[in-house]
Amino acid sequence: MARVFSGIQPSGDLHLGNFLGAVRNWVRVQDEHDAVYCIVDLHALTLRPDASELRAATLRLAQTLIAIGIDPEHSILFVQGHVPEHAELSWLMECTASFGELNRMTQFKDKSGRTDFISAGLFSYPALQAADILLYDTDLVPVGDDQRQHIELTRDIAERFNNRYGDTFVVPEHVIPPAGARVMDLQDPTAKMSKSEGEAPGTVWMLDDVGKIEKKFRRAITDSDGEVRYDPEAKPGVSNLLSILGAATDREPAAVAADYEQYGPLKSDAADAVISALEPIQKRFADLVADPAETERVLARGAERAREIASATNDRARAAVGLLPRSSSPRS
Image (cartoon, rainbow, N blue to C red):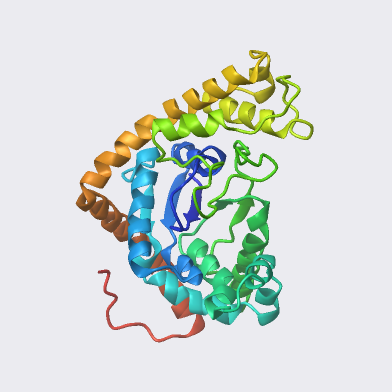
């Protein structure tokens, strides 16, 4: 089977948009491909998180992914910082990428424009991302258009390295994942649901209780004409509800619209469908939270499996560039 790599930052709890739009597909992918899933805590350091919050967020994200259905016995699930080859290969990638290439990355330009302090890590972020992918002889990287430039740079780095030093890396392909629901903010349906600050009344978190979910859907913005029709341009609020209900029940939004003549029942049914999808996940999450040692065991085993692959790739790269071999290669 082709190997697929995906990574996710522990920058806060997941929301409904993360789930319906992307992460739910990870469960499907693991049945079709050799899947490697990484919680990229080293990347999160560019956000200057509080240390205790980063540790807690990393563990909670692992528990959430397992609760969603990532099977650690079937897929490799691990924390990036537990596999030191990521940081080591990142340096080789930095020495292979050019300053101009890194300086042209649109995400760096966007993020660096929002802060007074710009870390060198933010600038070299794509080199670490390339290391993440190349360490696992990755064939396919399912990402949206916003990450296409990063994957193209990863391909360029891999090809340049192979041309200079001989075939070392598998050159990965960028693939558009199966379309997930484009979940918009319930209070501002022209903007994507996001990890915004404060109460975020338009964001449905995966761990919200039933009462909060029902309240947020009751207060969802629609419009004044009362017609239930799927038309994202003309009726973004109503269309968002139809998209959510359709994704939660595996139906097309336009087909869902035919079942409704009023907004009230649509809001109620959308809330019920989301609750039905999230309740088993929340129950499994609660079980995992009650036994954190089990999650830590799963992550340790995942890191061990990941290192079996990553260390071999890293050793190939070290030898290719002319670094002396280590007298021993500890795997712990």
